[in-house]
Image 1: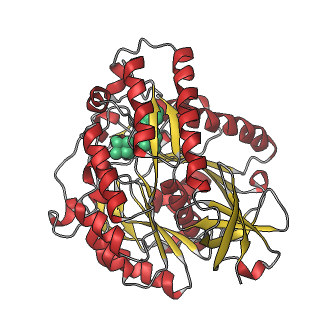
Image 2: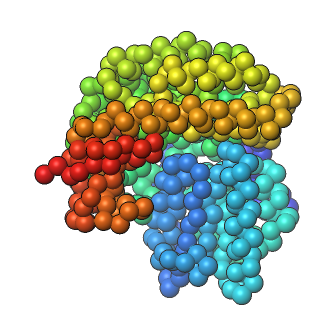
Length: 482
Ligand code: 5AD
Ligand code: SF4
């Protein structure tokens, strides 16, 4: 096991180590809490702040499960909690800026409540610079642990309580799979299911392969057992998670059982709705497209990150596909799954991108017919190859491009909702509409937020039929069909 340990016995991260892909076998570890930690949290409370992707949301559910299994109870108010964890994101700089802000607030709270334990976990501690800054400039942070160390949470809390020393444990090269950890799921009808962890793609702008480690697929038996249990408990929808979901299986079975095969087996469990995020366009093969088309439970929505519409930029991003190859997959998806809604991720202002190259992204947005996109201005991530590339375009110019892109994308959002006006759609009801009391809302099969008039809260968690009467960019409105 490669570890960087300093003189205070802290296990510190190393981006250089994290870059290596050693040829060692992934171990599946069954979570077990040691007896001496079993009552660690009796009479105490916790609160977890979660930032970033759905992967982090799922991880927070596991950390909540681990904390509750040793006696902690959830606190409604973070400032009243005995243990506060910040589950962080490192994908862009602004995500990190927010964390430093929250830490400032917690510092004030800790002055009056010195027994409060503050822990930072998730992707940010995996970066050397961030962890160094936390250790040197944030003495009130008690625990720092990375994405591979969740299972040791009780041990780290114990250490912080009883030794009063900072507990720091951030492994860079480990990549085991933690099974059977308890979970406190946010919803009683929608669930996250990790199918794989880590990423081996190394897109040149992206910090994730360093913070999340190498690709590790869960055994299909473990995934299917989890889904079956969810079906038995009455869950209606699952979202399969992974940085590159359609690389599923490559690391454990030489491609004999792939993502498409997994979708087919999951479909047989009887779960009503399956979504997944995120696939890599290069790995979206015919088997997966066919499974999406034939499995009734797989929803006709695909989040399909393209990043750029220009071949030179795609190449220096190390995306491993061309614009034409991407558009061909879009065509195949539309042929096999008529009416499918496709959304994407796009980065504006990658180092060295020219105005002409950016224009190719604008034309791609129209050609691909996206019905939504998460758009980002390139953010430099120390330690990635792109951080060393020349970046002559000013931030002002990038903002002008960004706004142009947003206009093109917004047009797609509206087209994507308007096409359902007059139709009856099936909606899994999430709860009361946040903007209009007396309305319930949920998501249609095509993942469109849908509001409808009803005060019957017993519909929450059920799938209902709604006739769409009006459509805006971000939502649809309709009437419940009896
Ligand atoms: N700058 C801007 N956007 C990024 N993403 C990942 N890394 C960066 C970065 N350095 C975006 C990509 C990815 C999404 C999750 O975040 O579009 O698909
Ligand atoms: Fe990052 Fe690329 Fe991996 Fe996605 S596929 S997590 S963008 S390196």
